[in-house]
Image (cartoon, rainbow, N blue to C red; front, side, top):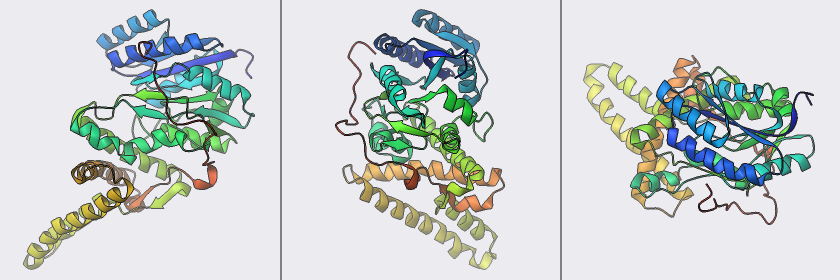
Length: 364
């Protein structure tokens, strides 16, 4: 251990905007800090506009958190937070989350008791239940929520989302930290850190009881949701480009429909009509296949909600296709990422622990 690094936990929070959300997070962390027997500091790294930055400083002062101005890229923000951290354990959590009361204590205890080869510990992240139609529809989205709930189903992973991930500072430094340049300023950096940790010989342990809640992905409305899915699709292709060993074949419907439409537009005029007619038929077939797959995975909701989810998730596929073109990697037009390599994980969750966790009323 670096002799300048002390025994304790540093919590690093990147933020841009989200003034009320950060205030709620800091309130929940105040409770979690009190419950942790180790020294704890909270570091907020912000690149908000002046008005929001001023409010963030006020929130940090009230919560006894350190405030740093940082760069735009979320990976660079987190790296800056770690460079300024005092302690040997670092917990990453996002600004739109709320920490469960025992989050810091559990993560610290797990890492202290784990062998050196365990470089980090993660727990599940649950979206705050919404009451609107869009909330119900996207609650069943594997694209949005699959990675967040995975720590409740596995005992060990090679990567975890950084809305709830604690790492040893030594492991983080050995892995080289987060990437600071990528196709998108947010998304994908957590996967890349996990791959780097694995390459450095570390694994990530799961604690299903060390949970966080986060704002629903629908909080920005349909436009915000589509933008998020589109960004996720682009970031996945960036990961495929730098880690081709984790790439898999994927029938990207955006690519298929795009090629069909381009073909229809370039064929001779005498056959253009029938070919153009085939494009919506192909689109219908693509949606039907996706819908059947979705209904086979989740039989609990109405068909209309599943269809809405399938249509919205096409934004992810569009982002992936656009990124393949931007990166100059035509093979990625029909490619995607293996998010979890079954050879690298332990499936069984720790005995006696469920994925349920709760925030104490009035404390978060």
